[in-house]
Each structure stands twice: as C-alpha cells, then as structure tokens.
Length: 458
Image 1 (cartoon, rainbow, N blue to C red):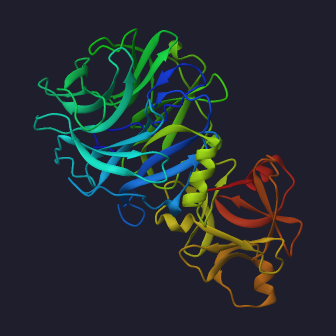
Image 2 (cartoon, helix red, strand yellow):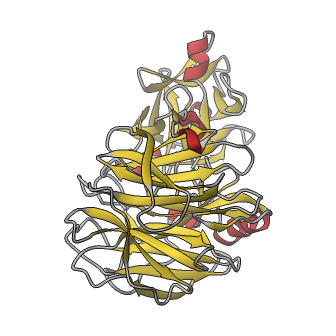
Image 3 (cartoon, rainbow, N blue to C red):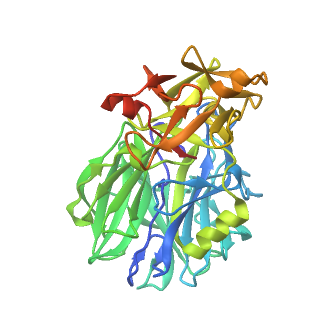
C-alpha cells in the first residue's frame, strides 16, 4: 500500500517465490514445475492523476526481475464492496494449486479510513477471478493493512497476517487463521517488538528457520523463529533502506541460491529497490544494480507468486503485452527516455506525466527494417533528430522527416543484451544522451557507448 508518511504497507514483490523442494514460503507450497512469476499490484502516479488506479493489475516475468504488464497495464478486476478500491494486493498459490488474492480495503490515500475487512478473490489460473468477497478480520476500530498469507503446516491452516493498531497503541503484525479465506479465527498478535511495525512478509521453512521481514522506522528489518507461533519471532541482522523504504518482500530465485529483498519508497515516489543475499541466516544484504530489474510503470506494493511456463504463456495469450515500450538508460538505470517540451531526454522514474516515457515502436518511416519512435500521448509526433538533437515533431510526410525519424536497432554498444539505435541518414551516429539530453553522435569512447545503450522494456 502506498505509505502514510510515517507508516507503510505491504510488500512490493510479495514475491515469495518457491523452489523445487518440499519447501513452503509465503506464496504456498512449492511446485516443482514453476519456472516464472506473476505479480499483482495497483498503480499510482506521483500526482494521483492519469496512471492511478486502485484495481487489481497483473504482470508476468520469466526471471522475477523484468516485468511485462498485462492488459495494457489496466486493471483486471476492481472491488465492488467496501471502499471500492484496493491497495497492497498479495498473490498466493494455495495447497490445492489454485490461487488466492488478498488486498487492503482502501481506495486512495484516506489513511483515516479504517476497515476491519480485506478483499479476497479466488482464481484457478489468473485468467479469471471469481468468488469476490470481503473477509472480516477483527472488531477493532482500526485498519487491516497489507494482508499476506502463508501455509502453517502444523495448524493445517493458512495464517493471514496484516498490520493493525492493537491495545499497545502502535502498529503490530496481527494474525488470523483460516482454511477457506471465507471465515477466520479470532485475531491474535503475531509480532509486537514494542515499537511501531508494519508490512509483514514471510519466508517459511528455510533451513530450519522462518523469517519475518517488516518496516521499522523507514527501514526494512528481519526477525526469525524456529516455529510459526505468534510471539516467537526475534529481530536479527542488519536493516536496509533507500531513503524512506517500506513494503519488504523476500524472494527466492527459481534458478539459483540467491534471495532478493525488495522494498518500495513512499508516495509519491513508488520506486522499487532490491538487495540480494545468498544466505538468509546471515541477515546481511547487498544492493542490487538497477540495471537488473524493471518494475511495471506506476506499480505500487505488489505481490508475486511463482507460475509454470504454461501459465506464463497462457497469461500472455489471454491479456497481451503492452502495445508500447519504455527505454531505460544503461549507465543511468534510474532514468528513462521521455519527451519534455517536445525535446528528447532521459529523466528519473517516476516520470510525470508518465505517458511522456511511453513509445510505440513502429517500422521505420524511411526503411521498414528500421524503427521509428511514435509518442503514445502525442501519436502524430515522432522522435527525430534536428541539428543532431532529438525532438518530438509532427510527421510532415517528407522524405527528410522520414529519414530523420528512422533508426536501426543493433546490439547494445555497451552490453549486447541491451540495444543501441543507429541513425538511418547519419549511419556513423547513434542515439545517446549528453547531460541527459538526447542527440545523435559518433560513438568512440567507453562513456559514449554506455550513453548510447538502452534496454527496451515496459
């Protein structure tokens, strides 16, 4: 959930990924066939305008790092009860192989709205969402923020944890137990270290320990226990933060021994940051290079579960990838190509208005083997060079314009897994940034090559 300035909510990549063992994490029992990831989230632009939607959004990824928003980054379903909106959606594969989605009952940023309920959907395949309902968790005059769930094998029940103000007067992590997400047991305090905590996220059954990550004083902090009993967790390790950070999520790679710890910055930023570790027991994390991951545009406080390759393909077939792309800078990976005042440049994400950074890549206007960049929010305009600078102009149908607006995509000059774009009519020059402004220049130095390298994603 996008944060109250002093609190916080749900784990970003609620991505409790599973490994092909008899291991249970936050997303449920592991499935050996799982090979990709699905993410649920809501969207929020910095000005709470275009790009803000408090419905359920879905994205997929083969590696859990680079994401493809589905349904053009539009919601798949929206709550029809309570606040008529959601925050902090969480996705879990249940013991029977189907999915459940949980979410905070809150639309927008009215932090005074206190709901004793959370939103719940069932889904067999993430192609349809059924059985919408709200689940009541408590009778207290307080909120039920950032719900997550995990399977407690000892109880043979699911534990639903969430943030709420208990009689202690500060936020604690509460728990209710359920078998069906229709009715739940009476609430209990799951974790109360004596200070304000919020946004609990679990990794269960890792080498004899269960891990709880949470937000403490704008920092992501861990606790652990050899049991899943309420009150049994003890803080350990070193916290991490990138400014004010909330919504921790612990993620296990499906292909290696790497763990990721994700966090989300406060409103209005909504930027995901990630750290990595090869040993949860160490309690230490190293910041992950932003080149290695890309969040869905405007995404906030997400939840992720692992899926099979067939489910991954089926979701893409059902909902489709976006008709637009974003271009990330190689040597400034927090920045994306955008237009501002009809000039091309790279600016830090999040970008306002966000559609300034969305591009439709079409066959080159002068050569269909090349590519031209058509603006999404100014669809009569294309990125073209003029006196070597890049700007957004209306297509005047002349051969000169077509040539100026056509580029040839090549392997990235700084990294062959990325892309570079060579000018059609000045073939010794490539699109690059200089003092964040876009232009076409000859490329010769290491810095030039990095300036001219971009990742085409979403």
